[in-house]
Structure formats: C-alpha cells, structure tokens
Image (cartoon, rainbow, N blue to C red; front, side, top):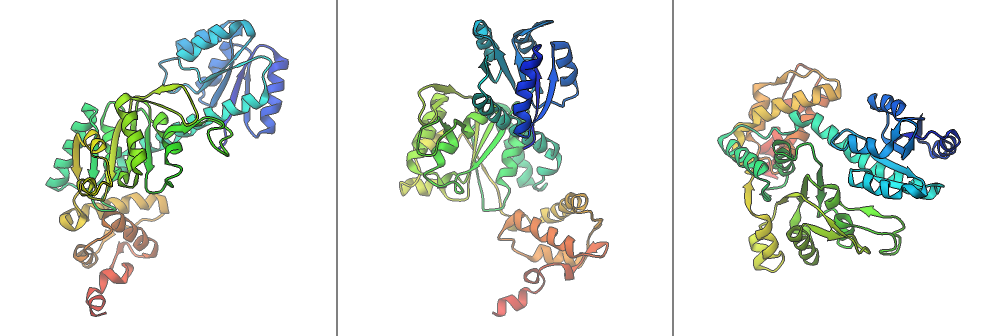
Length: 393
C-alpha cells in the first residue's frame, strides 16, 4: 500500500534525515516547518500519516492534536518528542494520537510505528470503499419476508443488539450484516469481518485478539486483532459454527467483560463492539451435540434473523437480475439492457441451490458472453436451460 507521510518539524536537518529514510522505504514524503504549513497540506487530504513535533514556532503540536480530536478524517498522528515533552506526548495519546517517538529517533522504531498506523489507513480506505458501494450492496429483494427481515435488522442496528443471522450459503448473510452497520449509529465506525471457517484453528486467537512480539515463534512485531480494529463499530463473525470450543469460551469472556488481552500481553484492552454472527448450520442442534457453547449462543442470540433461500422467494428474481445488470454494466464496460422473457422464465424455474451468490455469478457470466441488448437463453448456462436433459442422467 502506497502511503504519504507529512513530517512537521521546524528543524530542517531532522526533517531531511527522516525524509531520506522514508524515501528509501518507498514512502511519499511531504514536509512542513510549522503548524500553519501543516494545516495547508492536511487541507488537501494528501497526507496519510503525520509525524508531528511537539515544539513548533507557531504553537504546540499537542494543542493541534487536541483541536482535531473530533475530526474523523484526521490521519494518524505520530508525535515526535524531546525528553522533556514526554508528559505532553502522553496527553496527546489521550486525544487520539497514534504513537510517540522520542528524539533522537530510532528508524527501526519509526518504521514499526508507521506500519501500525498504515494498518489504520488501510482500514479507513476499506471503509470508505464500503460506504461508496453502500447503495449497491444492500439489495436482497422486496418480498414481504425480506421487508420484515430488514425492519428487524434496522431495529437491531438502532438498539445496538447482538444478532445471529442464519440461512443457507449464498443467501446474503454478510449483506444483512453490512446493512445493520449502515443503518445504525456505528455507520461511520469500522465494519470488520472474519470468516471463522477460513482461519485455521491454530490462528483464530491471534486473528481475533492480536499478539505482542514474542508471543509465539515468528511473532516479531505487534499485531492488532480484528476485535480491536472493530472498536466502536461492528464485528461480523461469519460461519461462527466453525469456531473451536476453546475459542468460543475466550470470545464469550471478551464480549461479557468488553475487554481482552493480546496473546503474549499483559495489558487489558477495552473494546465496545456490536457483534453480528452468521451461520448456515443449526446451532441449537450443535449445542445438543456439545459442538457449540450454549452460553455463547444466548449471548449472541438477542435477535435472530433467518434469511429464506432464493427458492422460497422467486418473486425477487426479476429485481435481483435488474440490480446485477445495473451493477456490472459500468464495472465491465457493458450496456446490457435486461433479459428476454424466455431467459427470465428459465431463471425462475431454476432452484438456485447457491442462492443469490449463484444468481449473481450466472448474470455476470451471461453479460460477458452477451453481444446483444438483452440476455437470452443462449447466454445462460446449460443447467438452467436444459433441466430435462439433466434429469435423464
């Protein structure tokens, strides 16, 4: 990820030394000798990270941090301190500064601090992308069942309620989770997702809680976990049924106490997250088989949203097809205007075992092969257009 770093220091030699190091690391470097110049640079949104000296000709860097504490668009700030300024740097940390480095700066320490700040920048960019696509990501259909479900989702969003979303694979569980995030007071805070089935059992704890250097072999640098990234926002635990039982216990404790300790660490980290979990498996049945913790289930299952399969709400198919065509046209450089009645009839006859995800893939593929104004039968896969042949096999 390309990062631009603004160095704010009135000592030219100090700026040049830091800039020389950062340029070797392929960072884009911007410079300012005082707060006035720094504000001009920041007004252009061209700096991803700020290295800010405490003592500047036109004021204290710590005062600037305090003044901008409520600015959600402020880039991460790393304070540069002399020995006597450490107390002020700690105060700046309380106002949201990312870190502080003591002069003379050790470049290894600087690089590590920038790497951690860069993780915040990457998360911010991802959130901006999600918000930019918000209007096109939350279409599931307008049947009464879906309208009722989305009303419940909105209520959960407004009341900060823990939610479990159930449904077959591909029904749109993550879309509902994002909608809950979008409709609630946490909309401008992080949405952090983790697929519990995709993370090896040996790594799930470090993914969720992070770790300190030396926590295990190969842990050379501190890593922030998903729960910490989600602080003040929404944590989406997809396929939670795949989480090992021992991790379920640790997760429950973190949620109950609203705090946790990184692997290999000693400091308790406070967090405030709304948890949305999803599963395509029968959790009550897993509880009976001692495969899922009942106490965690009750902690998460304040509200349960059951997503119906696409097979049970085929009246949503025309709207979904139109949505996907409008979604892919600008992204693929196409101008498909719709589907023919015969093609739509075949789409309605299909049972859609892969649900909305399968429909999305079918429409995307059909558009790529379509050289006419509308998608026709010839552009659909054989399993949709020849069910009779398929049943004879």
